[in-house]
Image 1 (cartoon, helix red, strand yellow):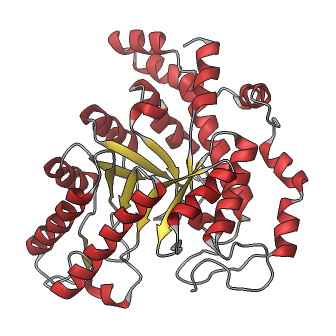
Image 2: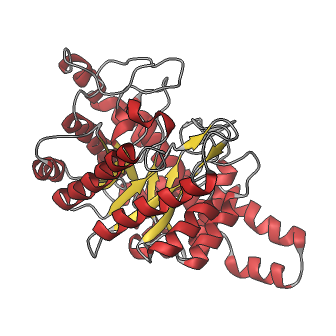
Length: 387
């Protein structure tokens, strides 16, 4: 790939940011409140617009329902457009209501299953109002003890709810099914891995795609293999990028294992799936409790950009030749050469060519936005959840 091609690919890259990352968030033990945290969806969108303003590649904001429920979603979409961003993926929430203690769509109680399905269908209504393409589904459903419920029956209930929701989608809308190995369920999770998600999506149809959350795997899982497989099958719909040391830590992307992020992006580039029209949606999903919110999103976007730039610099001809020759160390060396390249000067130049400050973090710090929202957002209820 020529330098011109690399620059063009980096300029065209798009990364979606989550509305919930701008609210107070944390762990099961503590949420630390911060000054200037948004109090409503409009203020979340305003903060997200700052990330796009300084990076140039984050023009889309995910919503989480009911955290971001408003009376008029069409009006909210217009508000976003006025600030240079748009509303993207709609995330359903069927894990915080007391009724969902034993599950939502897989709950043994038919009444609770109907309630959960009603929420999923409501989210499709919101997609219609906002012009959103993607509905993302993550279920905390599972059990904590052997014998607690019928494993096979829970899969039947899950399939029934997914089918009903899929049938409600519009012709240009997609369902993104996310998986997670464990937590809050510890004995079994009803959608624990990519194979389970993939199997359900196959039965639903082409507009059912798998979401890979990089923090949702067992230690040592080869995530880039999952990426390569799902890309080959045309079933990788989106990422939830974050970083983990031990479990679902929800840390900033690339904080724990930047080499893993590079390996993932190498598979993306290898499959020509970096393009906006590839069908793969690159989203952030981080919400830890100690870092300032907007700079954390900017840093994560920059980390994804750096991993992408390194992946674009892989000498694919040399790699293919080494692989064909069985040159194990040579092939590995080609990847390592790209990974060890300092791409920060290249990205600074790409930003300057786009009329942006070469250092988004410094530019945001100088803007005074953080001080302004801390002074203005006084009173009311900050967005987030308690712990």
